[in-house]
Length: 153
Image (cartoon, rainbow, N blue to C red; front, side, top):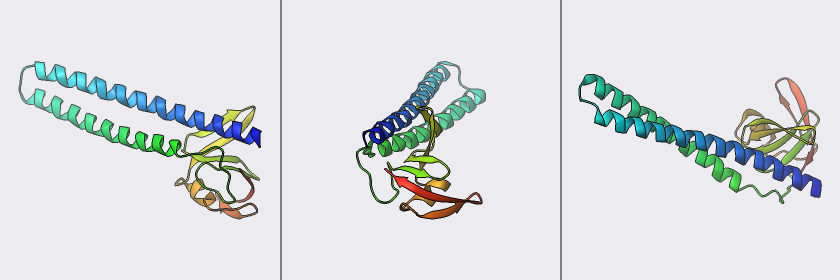
């Protein structure tokens, strides 16, 4: 059981690092846009100037939305308790199937720990929604494959 906890902690750290990196990039983009907006303000006015400002405002708005989305993911990850293991698949579950091992968290794809591949998937992803609520022994069809849940930690 200690091994499972260590793996889940490792996977959770990978997810958090992924979110932190994306958040850092988005914040840098916003800072760059703010700087460009400052520069645009110093330039002379005119149609070209107004178009440039409008484009930067749109970019800032889009980056703001991305930042809100990534903050939601960070909050979601903070709700995962690696010590918790239930009888059914839910957020934070480490699910071993006859095909793959899934960590129900956020969708960042494959993470390798100790030479094994774990797939980090969100509950609302196509495979995550198929896994949600399943118990050991349950099966489902995904991508024309029959998948059976072998273990839930």
